[in-house]
Length: 288
Ligand SMILES: [Zn+2]
Image (tube, rainbow, N blue to C red):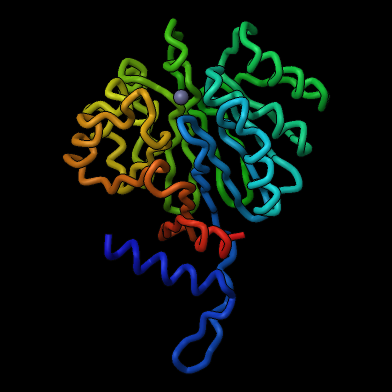
């Protein structure tokens, strides 16, 4: 943790644009960075990817979160979203996307299969159609280019009755660094993904299903071997997320766990060879 704190402080200096070497030499801003914002939306998911002026939003929190997510995106300089993804149609992932899509031009929309049976889904589809877009269900292996980063679809590799297991699984690659996003995928789909032979090794894992007991099994974690595990969940949420046994599996895997219920919004920056984290209002202002 001490190392992370040091990195956070260094990053703040760099972001202020006034970082100076002891000799007075000004440090040049780092180009071609990937920023991954794990936005605090309480008991829900919302992740913003930013790379070389290109933006993608993966999930959009609950219905009531749309306005604050749009405001956060505006603060980050978003004028257009290259890609919007609904990993699966549960309200805590798709709910706020309608307001976000209404607020920004969007180039492409991905989702897993979505039964049109909830208000959240209907609002999402209406907003997509207002932009004359269609929701694309991407195939495994499909790649989206976001600046110097790529977003590759790894799953789901099978059909499931449980909607959580239909979550789109995405690997974001930037240089040598890899960020795995798994929506609410649970153990059965995790194991099928491992069996599919997909390369799951990742530096940062967005922990499946808000840290529930039914996700992040040992077989899956052995393949991912994350250095950092990000859990998106609400403070004192009624589900008891993250589960203690899940946390112990990450402890066994020697992954550093960072939680939005404890830190609020968490931002990772990759320069392609290293990843730096920051969180907290002061740090996020510097990031804006
Ligand atoms: Zn969820």
